[in-house]
Length: 110
Image (cartoon, rainbow, N blue to C red; front, side, top):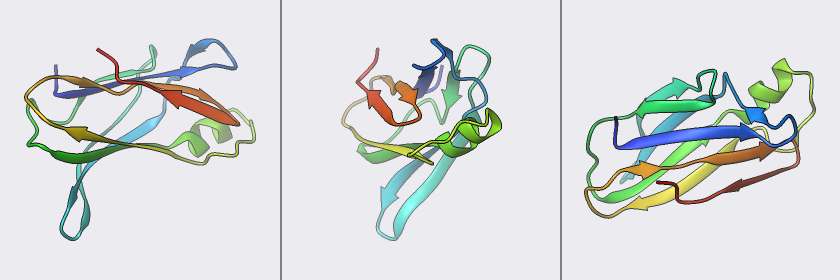
């Protein structure tokens, strides 16, 4: 399992959000440095987003929610959701997203 994982749930349909493009980046001196990307599987998960370890620092996970809703012909207010978080230590980070066309929520998962 990689250092960062995610899980996206579609709160409207009550099911996993399969097919969401996700990108991981680290904040550096010149802006955001891309590290990894993936697409959620049939269970709405990406279990291998990035390396086995990350240096301490500020990171972001960006979800292409606009494309996800567009393929379902559902209008959305949020074409993308970006979750910025801080890595401080050698533990695993699970960054879940609960999604609907006009709201979203996240928390520090385990």
